[in-house]
Image 1 (cartoon, rainbow, N blue to C red):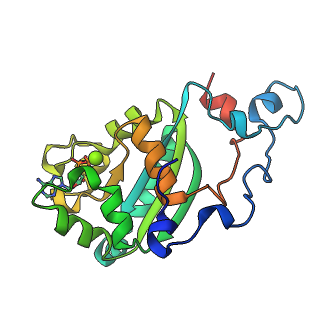
Image 2: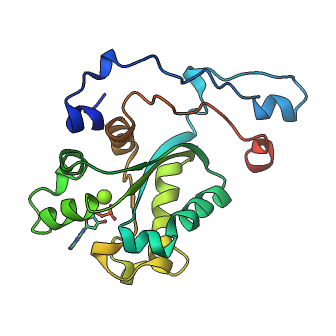
Length: 204
Ligand code: DAT
Ligand code: MG
């Protein structure tokens, strides 16, 4: 597991933190319910993470102006409407060390300092979404890095005009999603193991 946000933020020993609530909120397995097989549960081992269901990390980077525009609800709606499942969400004041770790691959870029300052300048809403092919699908929904090159209908294509204010971050691979989830959500305390009851109407 990668480095965790709170390690960077506070030097905390993640391993000493309290027990995970993951798995304590067991939901009716929507597929079983839909097929009349009764109230099954999903343990961590298959918490919606079948080989066809990936997790995807999204942060809607909202400075005060972004919050005023109210794009967080719009972004959530788009992923919900697509049929992805929201596994975790939090509003977060991003410490500089977390931002630098998150964007470490870009540390040699001339805009790195401005990017880090920007991410730390206001509340960030971090989310974990899950669904089949979630990484590729969500990247298509988000659109190109430069909003002026993002297709209409994409989040950036519809909601942004400048690369430095492109509204949303999304993981670019399954590996980076897991790294970013570990960074932002640590051991996933508070993440909910659930599936919507309408799952059989969204997925075969
Ligand atoms: P993406 O966010 O589409 O994965 P990226 O990982 O290449 O794109 O870059 C991360 C962020 O860095 C991007 O969302 C906005 C910022 N950025 C990228 N290229 C930039 C540039 N040329 N000038 C200013 N900011 C840039
Ligand atoms: Mg990227």
